[in-house]
Image (cartoon, rainbow over all chains, first blue to last red; front, side, top):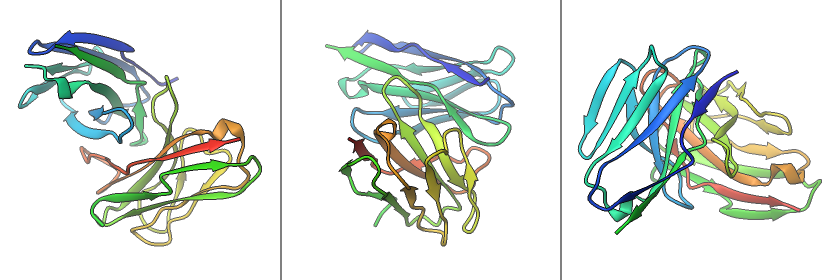
Length: 109
Length: 114
């Protein structure tokens, strides 16, 4: 079967750095996405990785290792507004997105 | 309209009733999707459409149907609602269904079946 694993919840301090991990087992791989979802709102796109390595976009970076079935999202200089759920999704061989259950990130002052 | 709109925002529905959730996008995206999101579970794909006139089944299609008569609209119908269909429903679209095209999500419909 297809599976995306992420930690259920993480806590971090304002101004710090946090790394959210995602491991996946899917039928085929055509890219990995990270989305942010604030409570009661729709998911919004953060990043896309299809090749191994690090993609940096401002305070957010995303890393991919296809051989290990592993990705992480790195958030730097955490702000209170970063409190949200972070969703990992893999595009499978049918080009459909398989979603993890999300990691709820709590930022404390 | 800018982006994707969904209607209604929320609905309480009696079991056995028929219900259509509406979704409209103005970005001229070819691909559209319907997901449901339940607590503790990832988004699950119900149905999708890669282009107007075509539809496909996702992971959890039973009890739902869709149509794609034109590029902009992608309604989701529950023929006879059951309590297990209580969920938040998101419509999404992307330029195509491949590559790095991100999916844009509507605001969601919160449906409660009693």
